[in-house]
Amino acid sequence: MSTPATRTRTRKSPQQRSAEIHDAALAVAREDGLSALTLRAVAARAGVASGLVAHYVESMDDLLVRTFRELVSAELDEIRAEVALADSPPARVARMIETVLDSGHNDVTLIWVDAWSLGRGSAALAEAIEEQMDAWQSFIAAVIDEGRDARLFTTEDPLAVGWQILAMIDGIAAHALTRRTDGAAFAERLAQACETLVGARAGTIVAELSPRG
Image (cartoon, rainbow, N blue to C red; front, side, top):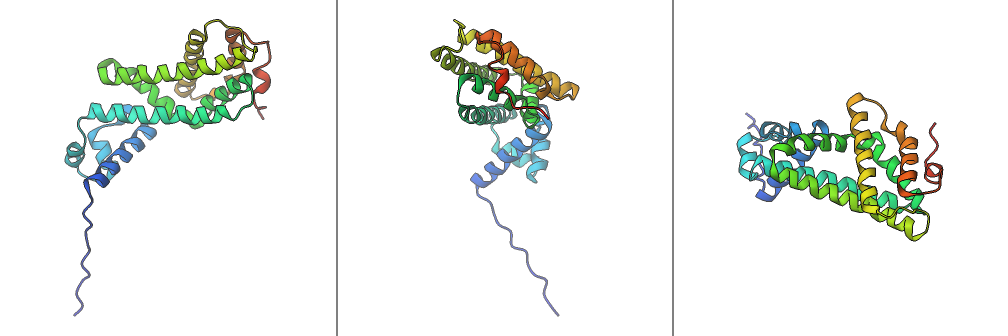
């Protein structure tokens, strides 16, 4: 009579478990937003009991903040790298607009939309939001400064203009997500507005946009 094979269970290290829970939280947030980041949802995604998640997470507020910060900072790093490939300040602004309004960034737009709402009840999340928005503002202002140095942009306040451009990007992206429209369809209008704000010659940023089919 044959003996059934015994399944060997591999005991995972605390580091492995922590990494699994971390990855599960990122996956839940990417698919369904920060508002879906609950103990039960993370546990289900990781394939473990809720109690195990609670054991490895300091608090759900802490997990929420860490997840938000990682996802949005990774997006900014990606956009920085993409923008750096463009060969002039107007082209960099155009590349930024096209990249951030692309539907492939809808998951991070949902993260931002949820964060703005949830941040009202979480001081830690509100602090992380301010930190990341400041990073975005500084990034855009640096691109504007390059245009000023090249005498292609004439604005005297890159930080204030950077804030205005960021607000327009966020508004268009959030509205497009909510109304299920294509944010990229507004790239030319946004580029025209940016030309005015940075003090560029009309058409110089629009001309750098990729043709739409």
